[in-house]
Length: 315
Length: 243
Image (cartoon, rainbow over all chains, first blue to last red; front, side, top):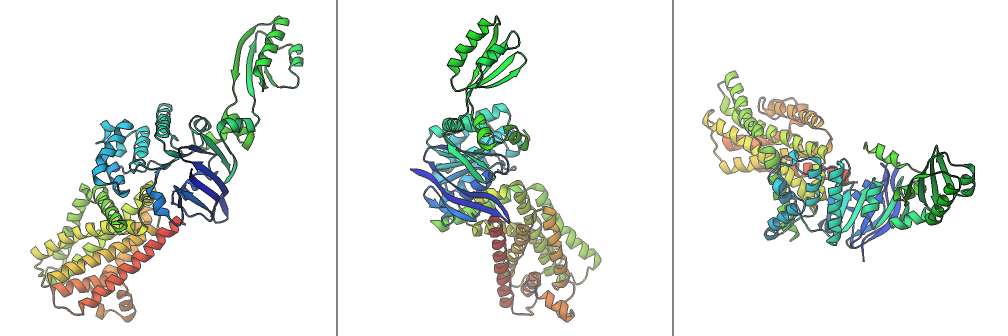
């Protein structure tokens, strides 16, 4: 069953087309990644799906409800973690969650029990009486995630959840997202961190300039992009001409005594290398095999450098 | 069920705004000091005739009380993205707007109550029609707070809201009949005066403290109309942000 159905969703801001006729579906219980650089249209898509911005064209259903005609029904069934941690600085963590639970009409009898459970789940119980503004950035993100769950939503929208977090906090937050997956929540996640999409998502849509370039599982995206495994070799001397001759036809990069060979058959290449290195009287100092990553596929599919995406976000 | 949800949402936002912004110690002390300073300034300048001026002082307290903090609250929440937190919730824009207007009205009501207390105890103001006084003041607070909301939702920055508020507030103070009776103003200014909600607030408060000079029902009706127009325009401004 599909939790989210999107058909030709489009958003214009004046003459600028921020999202250009995107279509996709997200299955119930799936973690769906929406990956793209700054200004690709990720946040605009999430804003349309969560009822914060009206689409210019196209239709979408979230939890079975039309995002334009039945916006309130959609909002009842979703939780949103925006890019900015926008809880209330002057309220404590508990007061913030209590306020949000009132906005989402959580029955009074359930309210405190649910808030308590969430604070414990997110390791915030000891900080429940701390004002939101006094929390670290990582704890703020956790509190915002907890706030998005007070209404026990079917679908969770996470907009760049780990942006600006240190490595430890980001890893901890990813762990929490994985736990939510285990609880059967459908998760729609936008990110510009390719490795995050690779680790967390069942399927990934790559969006560039408002258009979806590819949608598939991370593994299939790597296959589709035709990205090969890489064997990195360090020799005791510069590689001899005979070795390079044997590698003709493969994508080979030589840097001094180091060789980087792209291959779709690492096992055969390894055998060949060992044989040829031994014959030429050299020694193999180190050998490293690297499987293709989603980052490799992303570069192939979009022509963009992941460095550009990181720089745009100032990380 | 839907109506109960909306009312619960309005109540939750109102309580949150009071706790997070309006009832902070600096605001409470301002709410007490502002009427005292205003009353004292007029007492020192002209100790006689203050009973006539007293309803005008209450009206001014209502105007500043409703529009000042509300503009800061709304524009601040806009800037930090906290207003969007409300838009994410399953609540209509109408409920969010009413909650914000009520927040401004409650704070304005607090300052007006302090001013009323000062006027009654120190300046000898006598409220001959308490029901009309309370009803008229409450309706004025809603109308003025709706005007404050219209300004706050139409701009982006706090300073823009304050500047725009002053464009409305200062002409209102001088034209609403507190210092110069509206009837003695030149015709063009009289027309402007009757287009300002504060004029009707002053008339209503005068009618409930002194002898009624005009029909208070007409003032009540006009203030209701002002409230409705300001609320409709603000709702449209909120909708434009969604578009």
